[in-house]
Amino acid sequence: MTSDRTDSARHYWYGDGSERSRSIAVLEALRGFRAAESAQRRRSQISLGLGENDILAMRYLLRANEEGRSVGPKELAHYLGITSASITVLLDRLEKADRIRREPSPFDRRALIIVPAVPTDEIAIATLGEVREELIQVIEALSPDDAELVIRFLAEMREALDQIDNHAYANEEHR
Amino acid sequence: MTSDRTDSARHYWYGDGSERSRSIAVLEALRGFRAAESAQRRRSQISLGLGENDILAMRYLLRANEEGRSVGPKELAHYLGITSASITVLLDRLEKADRIRREPSPFDRRALIIVPAVPTDEIAIATLGEVREELIQVIEALSPDDAELVIRFLAEMREALDQIDNHAYANEEHR
DNA sequence: GACGCATGCCTAGTTCATCTAGTAACGAGG
DNA sequence: CCTCGTTACTAGATGAACTAGGCATGCGTC
Image (cartoon, rainbow over all chains, first blue to last red; front, side, top):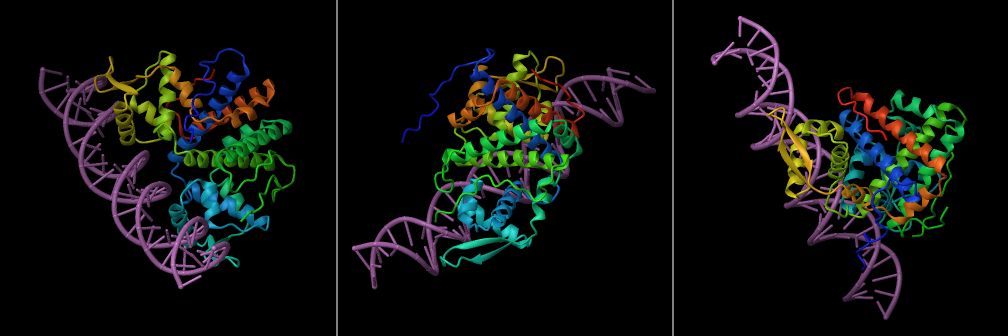
């Protein structure tokens, strides 16, 4: 296994106007946003008693459910990037809180399918959960076209991330 | 086994064209990106042995250092949104790994200043660290103006987040 | 100068979500 | 039947955060 990978294009520091330096500036901005967001999340003590991964899991499940697709623990674990042991505990939590049910898979008696036990609107709640007006204002300052651009950019970044290690559940089809 | 991938069926239940729904779509996109990013981070086991907050801390320190500003544990803790107890442990880790030194503050003998003990280039490494070409490609597909827009948007979101709970350290490093 | 209170960092002990390792049941193939 | 890989779970350990409290120093007041 070639475990190197840090050898690629390591041109140090920016300041010029190259594409590379623009890319780094964008990555910096993303990371800065992430830092601020998780700091804010910690400061406000995660209101709903739902952890980060719990919310992400519910979003994934509800969306899959809307598409008529069923999801098992393994797929969910891979999506979240956690191990099979962790997903079991996570599902225990969600099941105890009556947010999901575990049902036997009709095709494979070892496997489960996870059925969300809350209305789809809950996605909105989970998404909005702790949204502050301050953020909404920043977003609404964007023109519709700009908002569209931001959304598309983030979605493409997400897909790129998903494809980095993920050969099992994401067929490529590069957009 | 081969479960279909759901590609962008981004039809939301709130599919009107209102400003509110645009805002929610943007928040969704941000959260989706975050999900993918942290999953990816976990999958690739955080190459450097540095945790998330450790990297953010080093970035903050190195940048402050470049600006000729010195940072103490308290400020850093507030930036990361963690407690003073946690920052002590974090600094212990970084100091043991020879990434920082603790030096007495010349002004206040109770206080410390934290001096990064690695070259500034390390910012680039910390930023690029696990960056894959896939992401760079997405970013480079943006026009310069669009990249500018994305950066500005993310910076404004970060500021909004900082201001939600944060009245103390409103230092801005926005360049 | 000596007191009281505030501040900055650290220590001790706990909690919580993750991990690794190992187990039981099932599916597919010889 | 056996064997091997897969799926979900259990048990115990780890690590990074938290709360509560301790010491030293700084600063205002007498």
